[in-house]
Every structure is written in structure tokens, then in C-alpha cells.
Image (cartoon, rainbow, N blue to C red; front, side):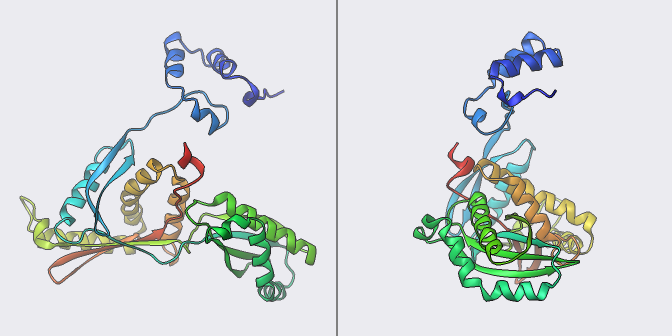
Length: 321
């Protein structure tokens, strides 16, 4: 019989681990020293806390504001690279960001659909009612300016239909909100149709929450002791172009981007696995995995642009810890 480990007290869990893993007194003391009471409320079977260094990226000008950005990472040079990049951009406007919309998507997935077109047409014809049901499931969302906005229906081979529910979740990351609204819509549909609904759940591919950052730096500022600014800029452009045609290069290209993004997302108490998986899906949207950012030369400046889905929150979840 398997032991219900999660039901044990903290001391019993620690003692069980000590017996099974033959831990020394010193190892047990280290586990106890790193224990955090709040972390016991976050995860199951909690024993101790694994720490990751936190630092601050400086020299960053974003949308006209000089900011310092917290970053949590164990990898050397990530924070230094962000700070140095920011320094190069400080002579101009810095980094400019745009977010056109902020909606998450819930999926209600139908399986074994014999007539996909008929189901699609029925769902689209009842869009107003389905949105009404979704918003009734969490009325406070409407009072804060959010709520279910629209639906989309996709017919997938061989016999799947996905009803995509787009929801403005306000300042929250919104995963639980989306699940609640999607489940309410699924329940309503079951009262109207004899259908097999496989799941009603958030999609972490947040294509309706795209964020774009742009920047430009004078070529002359890129000069090193061995290369002119023009040479450095051209090499950056070549590496960027290669990441668009070679997935082997694109993976490493995007890993460098996510070094910085993941560190900030983690520092802000958001779900970095969600952001990471969504970013890589977006990098594959053309059917080939490509670099998320691109660089080009124009008017004596090196220009850069990065677009990716960012479903982040500043309230709720782990942001409260």
C-alpha cells in the first residue's frame, strides 16, 4: 500500500526521508534551515526550499521610464548582458513596447464529432448566449472591466472541434478564471446538445496576448577593440537571419531570449513554464521553428524587434506570496 505522504506532518515527512535516503544529521539540519513556512502552502509534500539568486538589471529605459528589473536566475552573465544591452540603448529612446490586446483562451474540445460543420455553425449561432453564460460564471470579472469577449471554432482532424473562448482577465494571470468560465460554457452546451466534451481548459498559447518590444542603437556604439560598429551590426543581422532558416540555430537564439524573460517572470511570481511553452509555440507558428527576434540595419542604426505571447499577472496566484 502506498503511503499518503502528503497527509504526514512536516516532521514525519522529514523523518521518513531521512530513513529512506540515509541522510546525515548535517543534511537534515540543512533541510530544516532552508524551510519556509509560506512554501509549505504552495506545493505538496514540501520538505525544504531550493534557493535561486535574485539580482537587478539596470540601465534600462522602457517606454520613456528608467527602470530596474528584478531577475531570478542561476546562470552567470544573464543580468550583466541585460544591463549592458540597456546601456547601449540609453543614448536613444531605449526600448519601446506595445500590447494591442490582453485576452486568454479557454478551450472546450469536442471529440467524435460526426458533422463538424453542423456543430461549428450551431456554436457560432449561439455566441451571444455562450458569452452570457461565461460571464455569469464570474460576475466580478465584468465589474472590473474584463469578461468573455468572443469565440472561435476550429475543426481539427479527424473528428475534433475546438470552441475557443477569449477572455479579458484584467490584471490577473487568469488560469483559474479561464477554467471556470470554460467549464460553465461546457455545462451549458451539454444541456442543449448530445456531445462528447473531452476537456474544458486554459490554453497556454496566448496568441491574443502578444507583446512587442522594439529598439534601435547607432552602429558606431557597437564597436569593439577588434571590430568596427558596422562589422558588429552586420554579424548580428547575419545571426538573426540564420535563426529564421535554421532551427538548430533558432533554438539557441531563443534560449538566449528566454534566459532574460524567464528570470523576470520568475522574479515577479508568474508561471515561467507557461510563458516558455507559449513562446516556443509562437516560434513555430509558420510551420518551422524560427528565432523570435529579428535584427536589421537601416539609417545607420541597428534595429531590433521581438514579439511573443505574454500572459502575465500582477495580482493573484504566487504574486501574493
